[in-house]
Image (cartoon, rainbow, N blue to C red; front, side, top):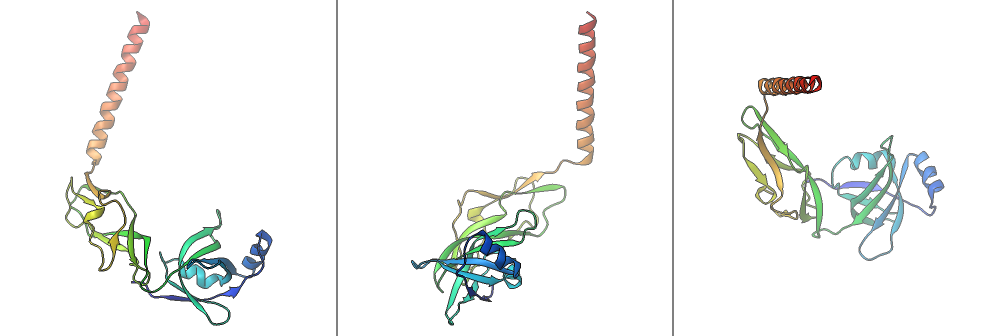
Length: 209
């Protein structure tokens, strides 16, 4: 489970594109805190620290507000520049310790299947329900020794204690298919070339008639 990451926020009372650009020029990031039925809280976050924190999926943030109050939050939406991929704006969801949330957690395949097979990963993330302070950083799925035809459905994935599946249990996560070898590819290519040549000869004969 991920540790809580502390971020010190500043109050923000300027809005609009011009104000956001000025904030980003100061190497800071405009953000807003939502949730708990309260009005949104507009803040500014330190750019470098926030960028490092958000490299982690579902980073649990402890946001220190001006005046000493702290809010526990999860990233809800991160807007990035389309070219530079720098963070433009962050929406944060306020949570409480013990509260369950539904999040998407990255899937990591471990182990090696049998030789000469193709691993088809149907999902790269799994939707789960977990306590806000106990969200797994990733979900590992073993493909060790799996052979052609083997499948792993979402409902068959072993989840950490306290984590429940929120996805369709019948959705395919991993499938093991036969791998097409080089010899088979060359043979198939030769057959296609022969068929094409034969078709060309028939077209020529028809043209001569």
